[in-house]
Length: 309
Image 1: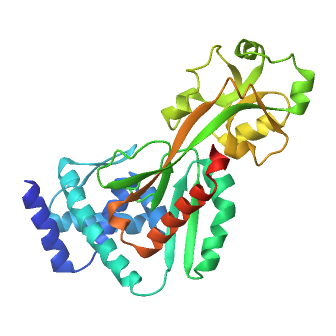
Image 2 (image 1 turned 30 degrees about the horizontal axis):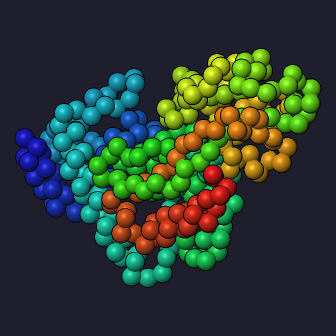
Image 3 (image 1 turned 90 degrees about the vertical axis):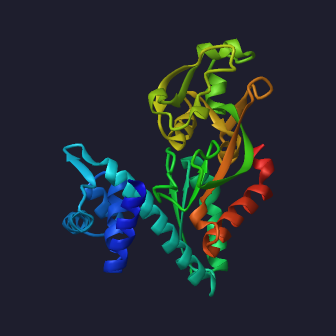
């Protein structure tokens, strides 16, 4: 059945010589709504619906189950998805080769955790765009994991290796986290001499039910349970909460170094290590502009390794 579907898909493409229907199909499959696909493509939801209808009519199959919750692929739609992604890979490869014939240019989307993207990457990226005037970089800094297979980003930075088989990964660096507080807090609060003393102090931490990566759970490895009565999904929110001088927080050292008011607490006793990984989809590995940005990120991390460790 899969080969029949793929043959029909290729026949439809050959007949129409129009990639648009499949491009719209992929957008809906990834966004699960017409409005989400329309926003991604910069068009109206009625235009998206028209392309989906044309594709279903041309292939003579139903691609989506439609409900109030959104658009869910049918079994036939899942098979078309595989074929459409293969076609997309060919298109991307062709565009990459075409672009590589000239200078480094184009738009590269980098998805990264909010702290790494905002505090480390953003201030350094202007150096690369100055070097290549026709290169544009979009930094998506957010407390989430970006899907390269869904084309949410061209380069992804995360706390774990990639699970998708067609995504190439490399370990960027380990990084350390410590407990931090302001001098204002430490001067006014009871002394902290051992980990057991931490149980008497308020903390800010992550919303446990909304952790975007299990590596952000710091509950294990400590001798005492921390009282995080203030919680946020966003690392920079936690940083500024600690800067308020009322609570402590577990923060990355490379972030804390940007804020002189933050003082490490029990750094000889509490030393948590995590890792950053960089991911690039196989379809993009040959694209010169994406390779250039990935290379720059790796170089900047290598040059500042002491900052992370």
